[in-house]
Length: 519
Image 1 (cartoon, rainbow, N blue to C red):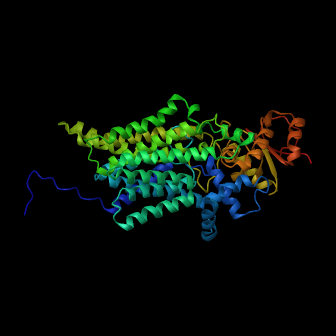
Image 2 (tube, rainbow, N blue to C red):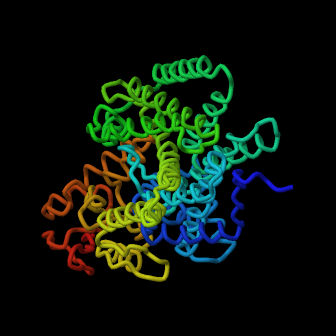
Image 3 (cartoon, one colour):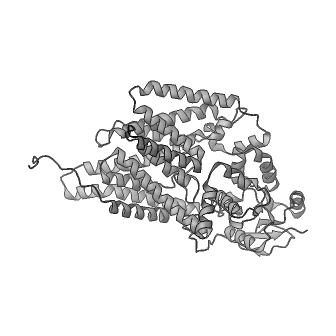
């Protein structure tokens, strides 16, 4: 029996091999566009933890700045275990895991997209835009969608997306609930805080699948605010050093954001508000549910931040929990939705002209390529002195990295270094971390160790003392510098190349030098 002439048959599903090829291609493109810097920023913090798990004799001074965060995640033990069992080098293990995390994230994104639209071209556009925006800053939260290095978030985000995909399914099937819970449990083992926000989104999704969603949502909001109030009222008093560390994290406090950074919160919620009413796009009912959940959770997180994450409060425990980090998931979902919109608006418009029709078909992916080019330039500007993709078998020409590597190869394992407290934000340093590269102890710095101290009160006093001691280290004279460093038994220093010193400096390049303190 033949179908009616005006009845359009359903498109043939793409074979799994096509999706495998597309996701593999996008994985390599993410690497090439956004770069890879395994020891930069937070990547260096995690790598130092992995190094310590592999060899606990490393970092004998201020060890807590390396080990404290290991209590909350299996990331470092997991990577260290892989290295032991596979006998791969640290750098090859990090690189292969980074590629795997990209592929897993893109796969998870496609699983979400399958639930919200049937068109596989639209799904591809959503995944492709996420890939193009990989390192997009998430408002002013100090997060990117995904980092150009491996961290615990490299696994918690894709697992959270998979949990969201299962949360969009019919929960009358037990295996769906089990799969969602399993994804959240594994994500929690890698990054408890980010998984808590993913769980909140899953709860909102399930609430919006019920008939009386609004009263339940109001109850949830009241419960969250009550819990936040109780936490704030019962938070322990904070030392002056802890407050000093916390106030260096300006992104914790909405009152310190610029107006254009506030748009980074308002715009995604506005986009989701528009998308849930879109009629021209063949979204499934699950898409509207996901839009409403993102709006609700974004508003709740913003309200909590406004009320309880304020710098003028006596304690900052809620600020320390960083409720605005929920926008990492919101941004990832927004990118996927906007990719769909871009593809659908161009493909569903049917001009008579063949040339115009062909141009419209090409426009979505041309736009995504343009976004990717912008992000490529942004990443090159962020790491101007480093190789764009730091492959395991290639050396990094960054002069700071070269000095750190010399320190690794030519100083005792128990050496204690001092370096300018703000070295990691020095132009051309490219946020390359000393501990992970040199594999040597160093006094706490202002930026990265300040972040550790802000979330771990027990480190605050040591951080403030170390960061103050190293402030403007390169512009001090020897007598002042020695008076500061001698009580800490510092044995080596990394100084700017033009720093005046009578100490022997067996290594120097055009930017920095490594000097030994006189005994």
